[in-house]
Each structure stands twice: as structure tokens, then as C-alpha cells.
Length: 414
Image 1 (tube, rainbow, N blue to C red):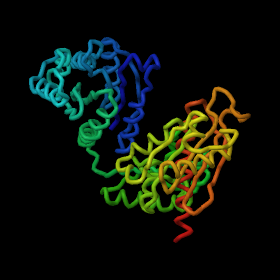
Image 2: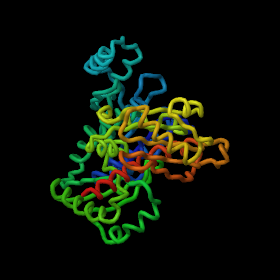
Image 3: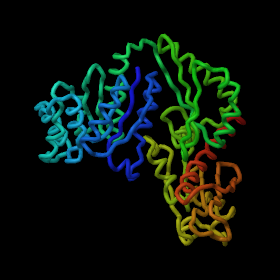
Image 4: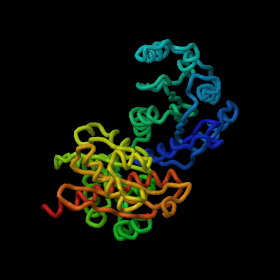
């Protein structure tokens, strides 16, 4: 079966919003073995949307339309599908009640324009949206299936996973099981990673191995296996993962939806150690990521966002003359342990730009880690990119450095 993707929104064409939804949908279609040959974007124009739907359905068995299901006048995906079907819209009272109930849970009155979201083409089905006010649409046009889902990512993700993909698989007659696993890595280039596992990639057909660049979140090695049963597919995945980890295990920091900060907190909690953070150029990014992990309070003591030099000195006890230096990073990590009452202290200071500082060029970063019973370790590096990328790279790099050191300590103790 072939399923293509149509993203709706003038803001996508103008570059005001990056279309990550189509990429995510394409990835999920690939995960379940459904081919996709075309992704297209079209603005909020009824005529052009209708034309795109008709044209794309001449080539594909199915079409997923993402966006344009809101309550405002420029949200005309429902109208475009109705036009392609040659029918009118009808207001469904059951949908009116569902949308009104959603507003009720938010202690708010439903605006009248939200009634537009209760309208779907005659003959079409509504796709339930349990976490939003915009139901989706499922319709058949000349034997081909079309699905419309909201553009809000967290709503769209759930509807695709729970409603659209199962329906597509049933219609495709696909009886085999397809399982994917993502190994997230940090600390090596894409070409370097490819060289390390080329001997597996060159001979492997099931599972297949693919590389996905995630920018500031590293590189992903995606394994996808196909078998008669889910159990058989998972066995193929596990065998291949074991082989890959023999080569790149030290680079893998998480699997699937796990994050770097989860990996770090799990290792610290296993030891009963608490963590304190002192951050300068990242300005709170590290603390925010750690605090975003459910249960972080069991381990995370807090973060001192010591952006200004006087804060470093007055709060953390830094005496180093230059605040972008190895000595400053060392003192910040020690200060984090003392001020926050933590077992482990980590720190980062550096130059994100736009100007040099303390004679150091843009991209210069110093990381420090203070572990119990060990001297403070300081690592310096030069990170690429603009101001935001340097700050984001610094965040994940420091967390990864702590992960690696904790793993090395565990190996010594084994």
C-alpha cells in the first residue's frame, strides 16, 4: 500500500513554521511497512487544497492530510475533503457534545466558532481526538482512503498511532509484524558511525539499519525488522542490537523515546547520588531538561544559573580571574556540590557569542564534573554553530560526559 502526506498551512510555505509533522508521519509509515512516495505542502486555499487532494489520490492508495482542522475561517480542510468527495458538510451533534465537554473540563465556555469543528463531510467518519477539540476525518473517495488529522503535534501523534495506522494496516491486508528500535548515540560524526558499523549494514537485510541525524540530539541508528509475529520481529531486533552494541555500545545513550537526562538520572539514582548543576552560558537549559524527567526530584537538587560573573563569585564562591577558564569551571562544579548539598556537581562555562570573552573565541566551552572521592575533572572543547546551537550542544555534551564517567566507574567496580 502507498500512503502519501499532504501538509496544510500557509505558514509552512512562508517558513514561519517548520513542517516536522510530515517527517514524523513518514517515519511512522515506514515503521509499519507502508510506502510513501510524496510529501506535499499547500497553503490555506480551498481551491488549491481540493486540487491537491484529487491529484494525490490518483497516485496513492491513501492520503494523510495534516492541519487545517481548527475553528477559524482559514481552516478549510473539512471543506476541501467535502469538495473532493462532491458532498456537503453536516454538523454532527455527537461531536458538538464532545467538543463542548472538552471545554467543560477546562472550565471554559465554548466559543461559537468551535461548532465548525463538529462539521464533517456527508458519508465520512470522525476520527476521535481524546486530547483536543478538533476531531479528524476519515473518508473514502473512489475506493481510496483519506485521513485528516490536526496539525498540533501531540494530538496528531496520538491519532496517527491509535486510529490511522491500525486502520491503514487492516486495509492493506498486511499480516506480518514490523518492529523498530532506535539506538540514540552521541559523540561521533555520521560518517564515523557509518564506518564503525559498515560490516553490519552491508550484509543486513532483516533487520534493516538506517541512520537518522537528529542535530542537537545526536545520531540515531534505526533498526527495523519484519517477521510473521511480533515476537519473532523483536527477537531479530534484539540479536542485531546485541551485535551493534559490541561496537558502538559506549556511544549509545538511550533507546527509542528515552532521553540523555533520563539516562543520567537513572545511573545516579542507582548509586543513591544526588546531582547539583552550575551553568553559565546555558542559562538554565541543563536544569530544565533534568527537571522535565518524571521523578527527577529523587536525585536532582537544583541548578544555579550563574550567568553573570558576580553571581559565580557570590553564590558559587568562584575566585578565578577569568570566568571562561578551566579554573572557573572547576570551582563552579565544587560550588554546585556545596551550595546545593549534592553528591555530584557538574558545571559549564564558555562563550556562545556574539563576542569573544576572556580572550577565548566563540564556541569555547569548559565542562567540569565533581564526583565523590575524586578530583574535579575539567574538559575543554570548541563547539560549532551559532549561539543557540552552541548552548544546546553544551547542554547535551555535559550530560553525556557525566553518563560516560558514571559508566566507566561502574566498569571499574564490576
